Image (cartoon, rainbow, N blue to C red; front, side):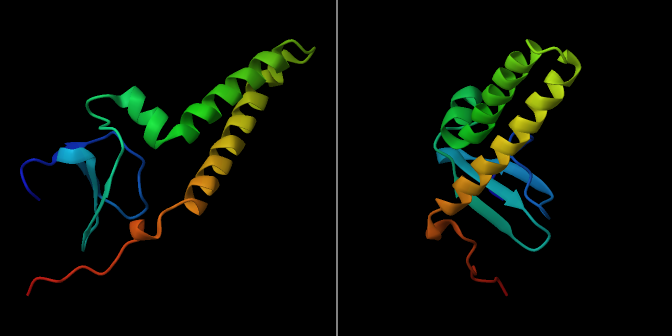
Length: 119
């Protein structure tokens, strides 16, 4: 891995990946036992994490806002105890919907391809 890539904790975990790195030109790399998988973000998360959320992971922002609004609306009902639970449930559902929508809208060029192997 070139030195311009730095280990980061910011980013969504990918099943099977060991670590994540961020590099120049918004490069985001996931390290697996046998390969690295790279994609480019729209906004560098290390430089501007909030803008990165809005541009590269809006499903998290939307689900948090919808969950908060649901909790606030449910709080006005008699059963305030379940308001937080309702907010969490709606938030999780919205996040799942966002992830599904994002996967449907993926560019076919983003799928992992066979890379040349070094002998």
